Length: 344
Image 1 (spheres, one colour):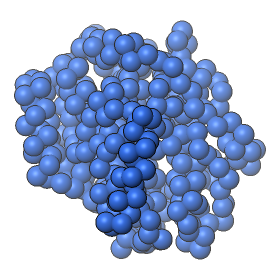
Image 2: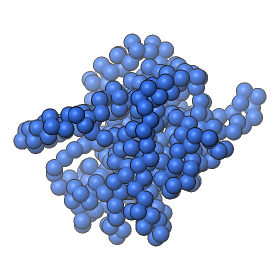
Image 3: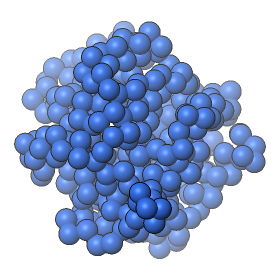
């Protein structure tokens, strides 16, 4: 376990990364995304931050608070219904018009629901889309900017060796449930015929981990982190009906001793988003690199527990790798994008 003191010490050193880091927080107007964005703005120099969400009123309040926290930071709101891939495309275009590089893509948007399959107008289940497809769409769209951040050049025009830190920081973090992977229904990955909340959870979690392994191999200047946040009190239950909310609140009362405070969660996620332990696969050997999701030190794809420890769930992923499931999952993901968004 990485101690909270070590986490805070690392975060306090982020000003050494230099000015003008760029970060995009999808789901940055509440919960874990907001807490991590606050920590990022506080601890960086003249950073540019984009909060992506639906609630413009809430975003305006947060932006005002962040500007007081660090007057040198530039914080913008990008309105987006992240459950819709075409809305994701519009949000990404708005960011790309302003930024040539992005150092951090942090994604935590999600919902807790007791409904069955609830399709958007694009034909995807809303929960599935928020937890997997839309996140991967943000990632794919912004890969050119993430790659550019991982390949900045020295002042004399020569290319630097990417250490995955400082101005070369290039990282993707998805907050979901690393370590809870399981078998996939390979002939129905989007669960058109086999939807259940359990299957949806297993598919979004496992497909995230496998996709990040594929991306880490294809984009060695960027590192990919899938993290389990533990139990954090956020607004994720706000979409439930009164009876369900009452039940959740009762359970939350008894689970309170096991909660990770929201501020601590933000600190720890900022650490995961910036520490050299989670270096890209294409960097030179990093002495303190953590084991990747495949067990290889510094592989570029990482499965983390809330406390910074490796949270790899070896056996299910090992079985899936035998059949090259990662390649199949990623191919399916790109085909889904093409069906909904066209050849883009």
